[in-house]
Length: 103
Image (tube, rainbow, N blue to C red; front, side, top):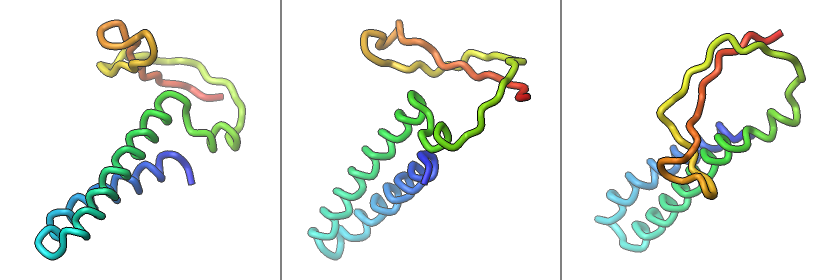
């Protein structure tokens, strides 16, 4: 299973558990605590997967993808910034979107 699919499953589990907290709070506090724990863990793991995918890429695609060449036909700077290490806050590098023509 690739990083994107696993991330979608984690976000769905987070939302279902979040709804379950509200429903279970009326029935049993133990179930509400378990739903809160599932919600928190799935949120943390989904955020980890998102950051991993942005910084390192999808390892399955890197292993099984085919090599080729591409030409950059367009480039656009986004408003997103990737904060890591000493580059945090205003000095963080921004994310760019590239349009590619793959040969």
